[in-house]
Length: 227
Image 1 (tube, rainbow, N blue to C red):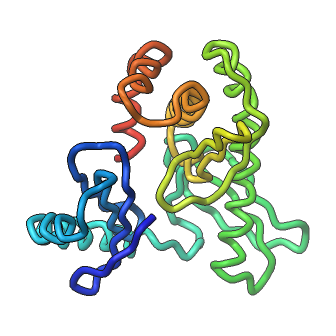
Image 2 (image 1 turned 30 degrees about the vertical axis):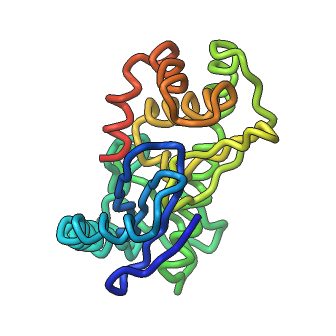
């Protein structure tokens, strides 16, 4: 990955076997990523940024505004998500083990007195991680049989720019913790996506043909996931 600064904005450049350049503004805080052809000269990238500059600024401002609005204090009454459904957070003080428990349309977060927003976030995210880890093995097993591949293992991480990744060499996949916020079909799509990479490493037409074969509505799910 290459890096440059354009008008005080950090830019990441990923070179690929493509003909044209593409610019993405990535959640949650508006990081700028350019996908560029392998042999393109840096001057061409600068000219591309000049053309896209106003659009890039507007999109970054919108995303950063949403990012600020979504910062949580983890207090009672805040809205949080689990598997695409909105829940109300209820914070309960306890002398027992800190934990999170879904109760109807609420998620009860049991915390110690004087707990901080950071410690409450850790408790909730650990619970989210356990929920996601429990859902993953069944889906991997299902799609390993359908696709005809085998993974060596999986990990769950709070990734900033990807929903998933696949190490072709080791056969291990990594899934974004934030998938637990989305509908279960989104998790299934990402698992299929990463398993297909064991058949085809790049996002070329061969990869897309495999996706069409195994999960015909994957494009619709992808749009939902990135919304």
